[in-house]
Image (tube, rainbow, N blue to C red; front, side, top):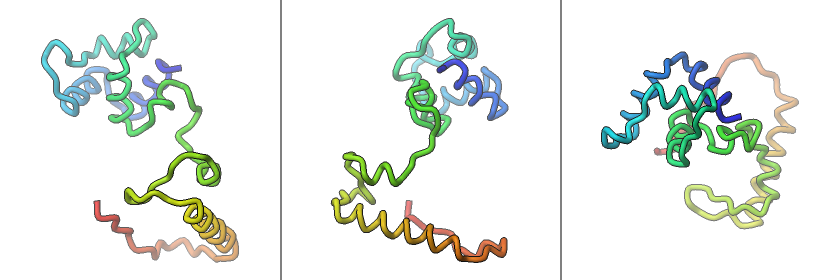
Amino acid sequence: MFPERLKALRTGKHITLAELATELNEMFPSDKRHENTASQIGNWERGIRNPSYVEVRKLATYFGISMDYLSGRVDSEKTDLSKLFISGTDLYFNEQLLTGNDRYEIYQLIDGFLHGKKGRHDDGRNTQEELDLNY
């Protein structure tokens, strides 16, 4: 699964093996002995060799995806918020832990928004101002 996903991600960006190696080396500088090469990445794509954890993490960061998706552990990058809100996973917003009450209220807000959205007419114009998250 990893080789196919890596090749699909790379070809989806319309970059060569050499370009990916160069971009990884620029994004994650290291000594010459540990730089990525086109040959190395080609071997990963063909399933001849397996990358280390560090290399998989670099690739996931570069492509903006999870390591789970890249390795084939999950089938998509989609996350169902409803399942996330009812899971036992700690959820944070701006580094503040959401309590069970917070989670319930946010779930209700999103649910209400989506139900109300069904009744609104979309005229095709985007009148929403850009959200500034101060990042």
